[in-house]
Length: 366
Ligand code: G6P
Image (tube, rainbow, N blue to C red; front, side):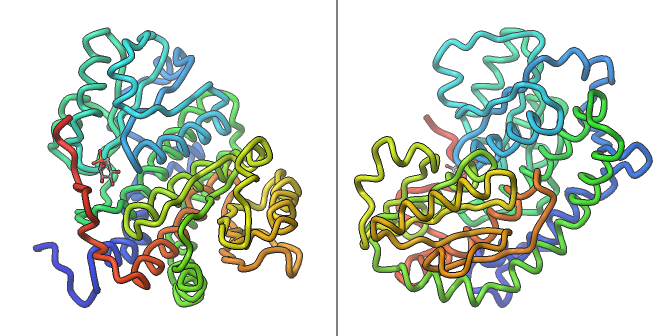
């Protein structure tokens, strides 16, 4: 069937709305309820190959890079393998040391981003093992990698990535689970992650159902000139992707910062005209994040808390509250309200959502 807008105001809206089904397709047939793991046939690595992996390096551009950062966190948490994400462009130009015991993962919606493709080619030339996490079947990066995970998110035409980001993170969560289950992740913990993944489509549908409340909050901040997006550990890539989304479609200046680094410089910028979006997962760092919000409030800065936790009443100026997911999967669910936040703020400013200035959906030039 042709990909059409239908009743939706724009493609970004349509694609945000499609996320429950997109995640469902990404998960379909891949959750292994017998071994409480993931079945990723396209990855083509034996358990022995898996055990030889000493490091995971995730490469991508833009939102794919931030999804890679979510993935790196999941790999470290579930598999306890050192992992990090890097922009593909940085990697390809810095003459990287390519290590035979590292699993390289190239992440791309289009499968055509030149910087990501060039990173894959540089890796292959140096004998690195690289798999793809790609949406477009038959794309150049997918073919160049030869193995990996297809997202099955369906077509994405909005410049601002939404369902591709979410499904990238889901695919990487399955990879992390699979890597974990051939190592030290217990069957009991595996079962919790499998159950958490299976719940994601319904949880994301619930978050989308709270759109009007998020829209009301977003509109309140449409007159801001600058905004901070703060997060730590699991919340940090969420904050980065949230800031990116806002910049892309609203043209407001948004800066993502690690919450604890705030006091080492940027706290100087906090005042009543500088709102901060603080990502607060309901995890062991909750009290640290509450302190961050208090520090900002004490300096007169408005705070929009995006959280799956019960925050003390009156703590934040505004609260976007979402249902709780498995701790490790919270970066996936917490990213969705930030899409809606950016979207409705941009709508309030009458921006052309699907055609943001100076940007292209797929950057196939240097
Ligand atoms: C462009 C788009 C971004 C996207 C990035 C990577 O810069 O504007 O939204 O995240 O490319 O695209 P890819 O297709 O490789 O995921």
